[in-house]
Image (tube, rainbow, N blue to C red):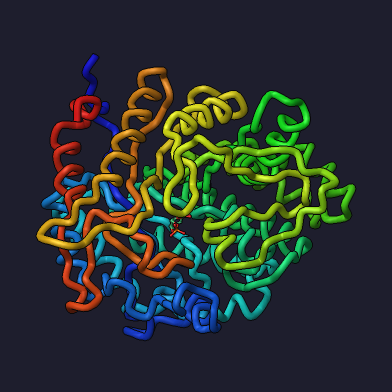
Length: 475
Ligand code: BGP
């Protein structure tokens, strides 16, 4: 049976400030933790950094015109905190406000809905130096930054995301050291940072709703649902444990206003429980009643087996965090394996559109059937064949097509999914993989003045949007 996406379903694409903007020293922008971290030898592929990225700062008109020509309905982008508050707090930089006003207005001129992420990993260095997310002051500064954004842009921006993928920036920041601040196995810092991040999220949600701007606000989770390798009971336990520490510790406070008991017990046993004040929990609970949606960034599921007692060593290499080799497990209780006979990307990520739905069913069991969801990221990281006239990125088309069909199936089953954002609109800087791992509908030639070219997938997505996905199954 043919079906279009419902009228209120947004078909969009996403990027993040550090990965596209460049112009890191222009118009009063302050220094971010990534500006500093990427300068440390060996931290990123070929020591690439975001100094130029794809220079969206100067190309935004051209890029948004390309979005409009494609028919894109919504553009998810993030605001660089250091453009608004160069030192993280204190003085506001008017030029930064002007830049995002221009980007938002440009989108709206074409009828593109701006979908704005407040925190997509580029923390002001001044705050990082004072303890980053382990310091409650960072959370307070975030709330101030969020309020400034609501006050300056909230008349036109009606969709907000507080945090992007805390599961990754905190794990890589405090356990593997692959992201700033680069701590290794700092478990105490890790759980403290998680709690402060939750405080910042909750306070920002409440601050937003107080303003009565009649928009929505949510939280984007890096959703890699863990499934047991097989029916064996110990592997099922391992998958549950993994989901507790990779998903529920992030989504329970947002959706229910409390941490899972299982997580609390396990942290208490290991003397890792951070200080959780009664008033924080009150705040979480109030925010959980106000939050509008969960964003899922879905790339792959994980197959998990029990590893208790097998002395797993954390792999601190950049490759491990970039997904190329086996991943680490902070407490050695489970191991993510890559069973043979399944489909994987060049970076070893399992391709499984059906696991997205399976994962959503698990979330529905926990948070209710009608939780409002957006797929805030999904896409294929690949090395495209850029020879010849047109870039034939057929694997990307196939990947996105299959995931969009799954989303349609979910909607048919009654899932409350309100939009899909392909990662990414344009080829951009991958945090750890430089420019080697491409995700975009638009290619950027770094040897020819950052010239933009439309890929095959650009035209394909244009058609999907024009037909509201009606022909996906036949393409
Ligand atoms: C998500 C991030 C994005 C983006 C994407 C692809 O985790 O939110 O910013 O980078 O993953 O990741 P990668 O470039 O490592 O393949």
